[in-house]
Length: 448
Image (cartoon, rainbow, N blue to C red):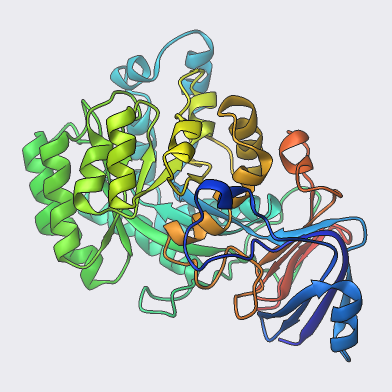
């Protein structure tokens, strides 16, 4: 690692602010420096300021000319399902014919079609597909993702998924809190690879309670998750969080509480898929349990919002899944912001209900469908997302001492990221000060 001087950004979006998740008016405070510059030394941000000031202090540094472009923290995607086999093209076509999520699931599609494929896949094959997914995220300007298991639903298959995540990370959960990914895979179309690696930093989550397999009753499966899966996950240090799909037809409030309580006793932090299809009281449960996040929340009412606020639980909103399912019931983002919640945006990348790794697409949906401002959406997908995965002290903003995970976007104004949708604007991606994607050269350059 050497020294970089990033100069002449049209906007250096620093997100400088308090050392905690941002809420209220803070969501709109991006800490923009025009004609901004940043000094990076040994993989960390050393100084930010006007370019002429950075240039004076950057003797001997490698110059990165960001003229006419936006420089900002890499996106932090706080809710993804990175590892799975196959796709769900049949489900996609059936939805286009008017079938609902529930109808498709009852007919053997949905989660179950992916579970069958994932159980049958070898660890090697899952790793190969996950590498490709990781590359997609980097191409979209994302440098850190939270990634869940949940498509195995047996002890061996759930562990298999989490071990794939660990292989991508190449570090154990006992590391320094930031994961490093060095993975070899075939380059995406139009890219040439130098060094044969892809870099993405991953926060692993155990989601064994994604659905109840048909070979078990619900109570039998809950016991399996608690007594066999969770102890293995913890003993092998395969996850930092435990998640559960708390929804009618999946895991009810009591079952979800039982699983989350067991995970908490074993030292895992908590997340939850809640109130996606019905208002089943999942948000209130996450507040009761002191969870880090409550995710989805499409059906959450005023009481659920108030409970999250009282317990300081961060809402993770997933407009991509609403869009992909052809629904119009987006989460009540404006009410959550007005209530003082530190809102997070994420892709919910998965093969069924949100097959996109693009946070830029999520920014567009947040602004057009949930009426968040572009600034609020940027904060929700960077620094707030970093705090939702307990990484806010290291990533999510460009401040001295934090890791130099940043992206150069080929636009002059940060609002263009939400305004132009369907157009990739990623120009270069840096992880810990290393350039891992440079579209100006049309290649990946991974040296870590």
